Length: 133
Image (cartoon, rainbow, N blue to C red; front, top):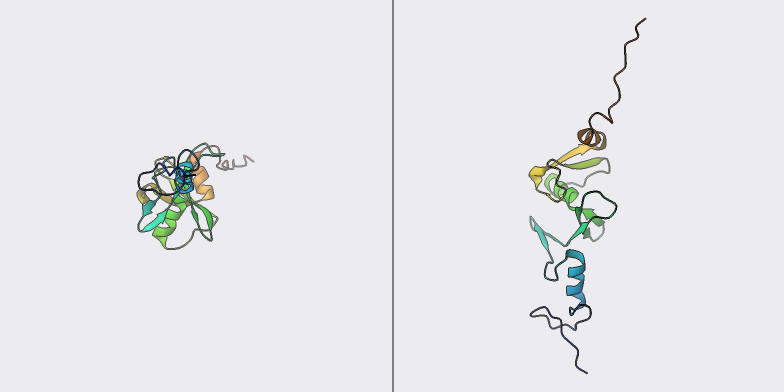
């Protein structure tokens, strides 16, 4: 019995799902395209996943061996600073587009400042009133 080959041109692997080999099927499942494999950021190669679960806005994430899943906007700032971010540091997208991970669009801030940037009136402590007596 002769096995059917992957439908991607130049691939000689056996086809399994959707006419693709396991590698091309996985690329399609993660990126929506069986040929899209790598995102290049300053020589750092990674496979991206668009994560929309439990969030109002989508974010790109990648998997790094030894660290697990990492948000690309945090990785971009880490690469620029030359160090890992702490859990108290937040990366803010200046233009509000969570898919725009250009360094010019990212700003490092704290959790409190980030909350105040997005909702300045609701989350600020009310000013103390002067005692009239």
